[in-house]
View 1 (cartoon, one colour):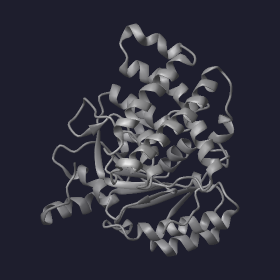
View 2 (tube, one colour):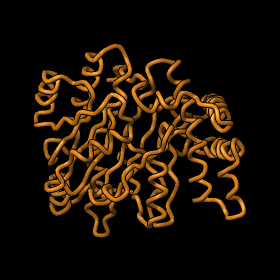
View 3 (cartoon, helix red, strand yellow):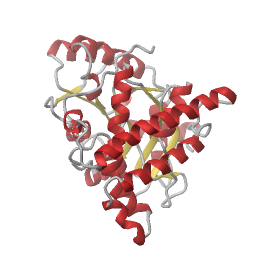
View 4 (cartoon, helix red, strand yellow):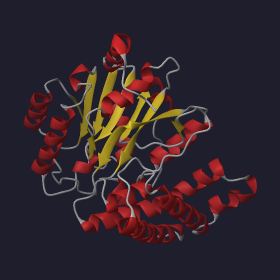
Length: 353
């Protein structure tokens, strides 16, 4: 676990890292909702929160924002709010979430930037998020990639869904490293991301970062885990969209199963990767057990007694919904994934400040 910097030397190394870092902010999840004004207001609230960071975004070498509809006036207003120049990279309305990450990275000036930090417009970072995410790069045996910790809000539902959606598994490659990361809260050396960037996975909603993590592990590239680099992921604005999210995530388990089987299963069980709905069902059963055990082990306020029973009920209920999506997808039936992968984003506009 990273600790706050001590002494002028550590502070200077942290400042040097920041001065060669680009922040790429992806805004795909602001597409959902009523209109462009709503998306712009959401982005303004997020930039105001970034201004409170203990490592100021003003000290970064570059800030890239991907978008598919901000007009010149909106861009200028955001630059004024940020207090610095912003580089806006326009993407097609059909560009998927991970494609936007790659396109945003392509907008990074690598002559100035040695590191790149990825954040999402639907996540709310804690005040020392950026500092804690960059801090491992100052260590003598510095990693080439650092994953922060993402969770939902510290409620019964948030604790339950965090145990399902944001799991971190220790890596055998390095002490304090993780096998997996999430694209909303991760930093890389630019040359590392250039080598391992997100690959196209046709029809997959949100599993690309898990696949990339497995590819990096197979290549012997460790991802350090910085749990104090915390960001809170919003839930969608409506209950209907929460259900849609569960359905899509369940379907993702089908496409992720072959990678998980290759990475974790012995040779005599490799057939599970080609078993239709059987492999995904095994994955979902294993995930359910892990999620139930993960409650109160996620750096969130613990739940006890009736609250714990309620959280367990949410885990089981949401896992059953995910499993339904996995079974349908495993049987070869589409669950609306192509549209979700492109322009049909969920809505994340509730003002939580």
